[in-house]
Image 1 (spheres, rainbow, N blue to C red):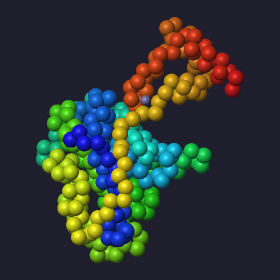
Image 2 (cartoon, helix red, strand yellow):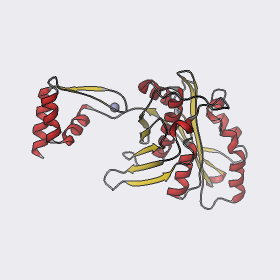
Image 3 (cartoon, protein in one colour):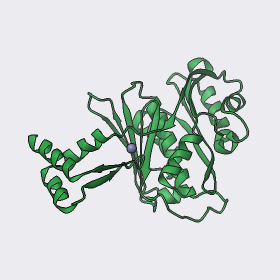
Image 4 (tube, rainbow, N blue to C red):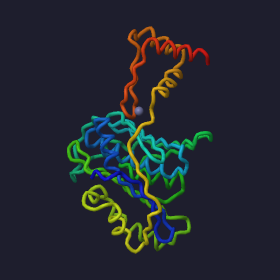
Length: 295
Ligand SMILES: [Zn+2]
């Protein structure tokens, strides 16, 4: 590990298939450290972060962002992740969840997330009204749920694998694969992809032994994999004091007045995504109240 995280855009079979390969060990380790997640929460959260980062890469607009919310009704609660083309961030409702391993010794992500709810995807392109898509969860195992989203909401058949390997609190590796045949892709190539998909089911373990590009050449041998572009990806938050001020102002006059009266010492806000704390004094809050009143 410790190589830089990368989002690698590829094509196969002379452009008949487009794909993304993601290495995200540092990104998921950063998320786990910030949110102090237990292993099963790290796996669920990490997979969602990676799936969201892949959606972010496909937005094709630098200032656009995508928000994925997975609410499966399981004990982990909601998982919320936001990505743009370069970075990803998120949070989980219950980061310290403890759940017994499955019978096969693997983390029980599906149980933690639940499969009784929905995954929603909101793509925000700035000026234009956002695109909103929603699908029922298939299994709560995340990769299958993202694949089902692409099929149902974007009419794009998709093979996706997302994996996080942990040892206790340490994230050993994390990565993902996404492959999407184009509409005119011959059936013979789609069959090849389906035939090979079990190979990348255990991507996080394989990444411990082989770099992503070597894995690509082995898995996709004969399908002419070509790397189009490689970009760094990281866990990072774009919060700032001025964004928090805006959020406080949107609380409205009444709420701010309550805060000023109740919290004699001012207020401390914590960012959901990066846990950064900002203090707002009584004086700051009064200034924001004045701004709220101007509206
Ligand atoms: Zn933040």
